[in-house]
Length: 125
Image (cartoon, rainbow, N blue to C red; front, side, top):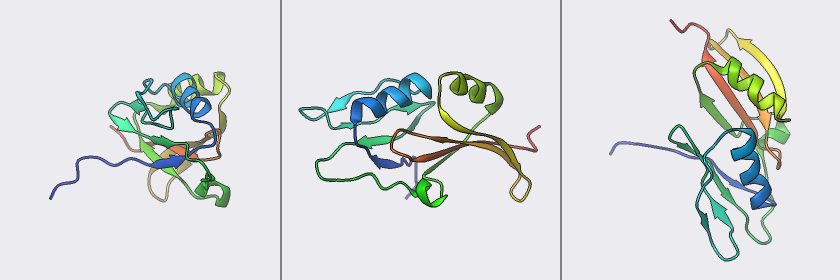
């Protein structure tokens, strides 16, 4: 057995609003929609997916409300990305250095409060 991918699965209150955030603010590709009316989508960025699911009677329950991360993305060159999404109005916390594990990272909250962290290695060469 070999793991080839993984994706967070987020229940959302408004699928269109969430898709627009991931696409228009975070720069993910506009996804295919499933369901009638649409209730599921998988926006993708650089081969990585976030599953978004709007299901009747299911309330989003992000870890972010407890100061825990819902999704962590290892990246390259986060400074330009940070500036870009900040200009687009993302609810974002500044870049911080985490010497304990050698990463520079920033946090973004999506419309349902999911806490996304984008990070890069402080010691990259």
